[in-house]
Length: 434
Image 1 (tube, one colour):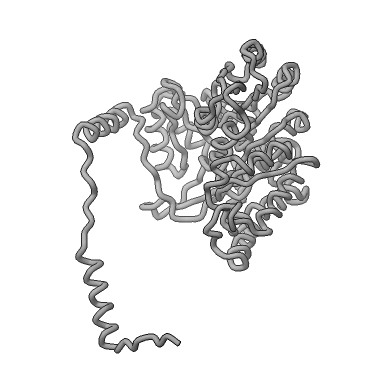
Image 2: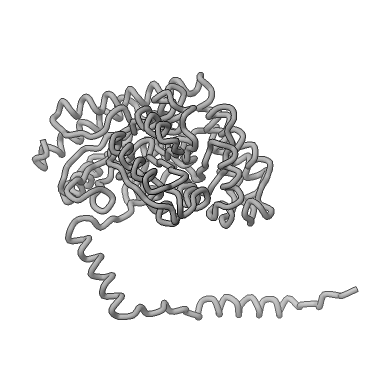
């Protein structure tokens, strides 16, 4: 039997000291960019700064919740720019379940799903999501909803087929469409008549399969897509409907089933892509739920699924706990009641004060400002008054359509909302917005 060599204590100390010396003295220099490329990038960044579109990241020093602390500040500020619609990001049951799964199932799987990355908890969560939407469905988990959108089109459609996409769909849908060889058609935002025309063009082009894709909620505008009208047109042309419901799952619709439930057409939507990283716990993870045949094909061909690590057990546990809270009327009802009361209060007071607001029937309420610099200045001034919001400008939104996107949460109290409106009014008058 092989015997391990004996290492004296003095030798161990010597080796340890050399490792520390090596680590502290070796410097790995960054590779130098080609001069022309470096100059081009520098000019692009300078242009963003001049236009007021350069984005900086504020660092928060607390868990995500209604009142947070921004690094460098000793006082809390009210957060009105998170996707934490139900306030579940630091909900005790969600945090506890994440911790429980972490200790029971480990930190991660170090594998993709089809090799050795599937635990029973992953199948349980997929079943839980399927049941949340109703019988006859199957679910596939992804690392994010972005990945779900990146993987769906290339897997399901051929170069002979057609994708008909809303003009204002999320960037992840646009990128997913770019990865697919299917013919591309685009219809005007939320316009069922134009959708009808584009589907007719796809039929005339001889496309055997036509897939219509739309955001359920357009997150920069707070607008709910007209799914009932869209379903009518989709069925008229024998097409397939995919809805990205990232900004609806868990809180839109009577029981939080999203825009399909909101419009009463959940049984007419073939596929839903959504996220576990917004209302359902705020961490990460996404999924596609719907027709079992399509989900089975995705499980065998979707590249983001096949070549990405499986969801961490803690994320699975948190999502399962969040779904439990949303599925239970006793915990769901007070959360939804508070969320929608907050949204109504904010919209009513801001409209009465003279602000121009976009959107309708959603917890996203954009305050329209137009000028990117004004949006940035207003966000900074509001932060000084204890209200944390972000100004959005090109290229996230169209030029001259800059805004502050306010997002209400069930975690906000009535007092929080009133404080935010008071601050908006004060800053709005200072900047001559109202």
